[in-house]
Image 1 (cartoon, rainbow, N blue to C red):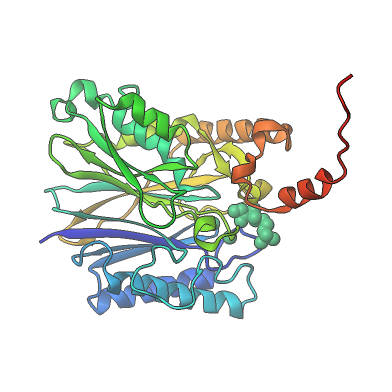
Image 2 (cartoon, helix red, strand yellow):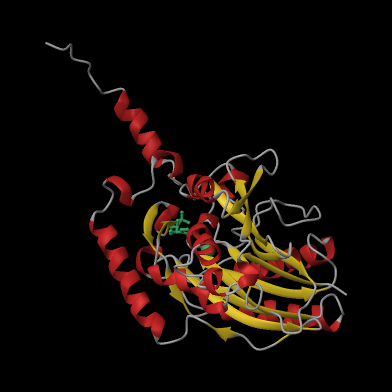
Length: 369
Ligand code: F6R
Ligand code: MG
Ligand code: MG
């Protein structure tokens, strides 16, 4: 029997500004997930939060895109929204962009990543959850972790991986349907770079191992402003990555996160800052950020999860966090000039556009002398 791992997350309200869900909301989500397990809807589940987003990890045998699982997640977020409203929390129901559930959370606000697998004898995997960033945050670490021997030493040392990986990359600006291209490393290495260099337009949807055809990684691709037509909060993506044996080791997948790479997100979804690797259940603070990413490792066995290993809760990452703070402070020191703030096409709030329109009328044109 196959096992499906589903991670579905949403911001349904937060204490303070966009900082963290309340204890009551998290408690409620945990109770509901416990009920889901007891009723046999799924075999195991976990509830965590990253900044202001609650993430539900569910293990089941129903396959990806199953309406029962998606409806369960949607209903759970309605429950946490109800609590957020009753407590007068900020942004209650923020990511629930549609009124009625229609079979799948995709296109409705919550972010999701799902993978159906034949469990290996030992099945280690990592769940990534980010806040104050878009799905393109995974372009750098997933590509490097799978395709670059700088991080994935297995490409040189483990014969199983020599045939490389196929990257399925989505054009997230195309909203009528899913527009996807499939490219392989090593053959298409440079073409992949051409796309991934623009992480607000092209994002990795999944990674498949060439030698075995096994899906190694999946990531959410939702861009909320493309769904809502306006800024309603950053997308705050999730990803699931399998590790070890025929896949990169856990450490190889985590290695690129040590760069604390720059991404678009942070305050008003409109600033370039460094991604800070954080423990699970970390809050948001400085400048409505910084952009954060948590990584939880599990093994799944016959539909049951082990306890989580909280990968970024390890002394090594303290120095990376410090580096991320310094990089972010460096960007922030330049305020709104040039590359620190998003370009016009990515500015999430419309104020600049309106201001420019007003100022445009005040320009005078002087002839060249
Ligand atoms: C970024 C984010 C925050 C808000 C900011 C203003 O993703 O959630 O930076 O954009 O706090 O929030 P509103 O517009 O809700 O007052
Ligand atoms: Mg929010
Ligand atoms: Mg969020």
